[in-house]
Length: 197
Length: 209
Image (tube, each protein chain N blue to C red):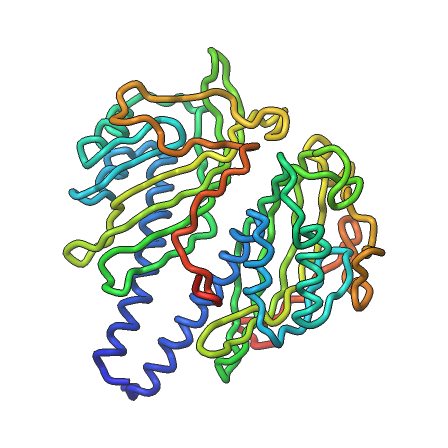
């Protein structure tokens, strides 16, 4: 091994670490309602953001439309989101310039629902893409697939989803919205680690 | 200043840990989608065994195939049951690579949300369940790839969503299968409230004990 190969290996480890942090920071910012900070995690060349059935928001413009409207919105103390960014699998492309990430998100929430406060569980799957620009990793594409959204009291078998939530100002309708019990499989961004298929 | 070879060994170790973490997490994603053939392929051809909860010990690659395909899947042509869901989140991994860099061990928490029958593995009405347990697994590196050498999942509780673990610690466990019998009885069937401490594979990071 020469110095050049060693540098490549070190860079790969740093890339994976930095992307994992990017995703986790997204979670902390989002949960804290720090939407400007969320927007700043995305590349100027962002492809799209798609969350549950809200619809597709394209480009940095779409992104600002999606998160920007929530900046400064008052949030009462009882209302919260805790979306835990879990089980990340990061694949950095051989050229080291792009990457994919799959994550699970078990989450606890309390939010207004039909005029009352509701405690809810959610679960979903991220299928994200990242890009390295000027030595920094950014989100290029974010797609969160809802598995269930249920009330704390009743559970996902009885109430797989509390309601549908399409956003009228989206650029396009959702491309994938198949909560439990559809049996839908969010495609894997990675190849089988042993067979390579 | 370290030599190039020493630096190479250090970065290799970090890469090994990352590869093993990835293997364990991908195992989770495949098992949650009931892709049992893909799960079997994550095991080395020289794999030692698999033991999950009270199902008993299945030995060798053939035993692993019998466990996942014949027992858990319900036969190679069995179709997933509509509404069945089992998500086992792979959490808090501690991976220890042995000094030779060819074998490793890992401890993980498995936190499960499920919609499944409890009468048997495949029969009965769907119920919503919580479950929690601990993995102590072994990995082996062959042809540059990390694979499972041994998988052992100790079940802490599996409870109906509505009841909770204090009221109903375990449902859906009826002992080793008679149709697809294990090669040896279970070694750690001591769910809550036994108070059993599933041994840790790692040494204390400060005292070394």
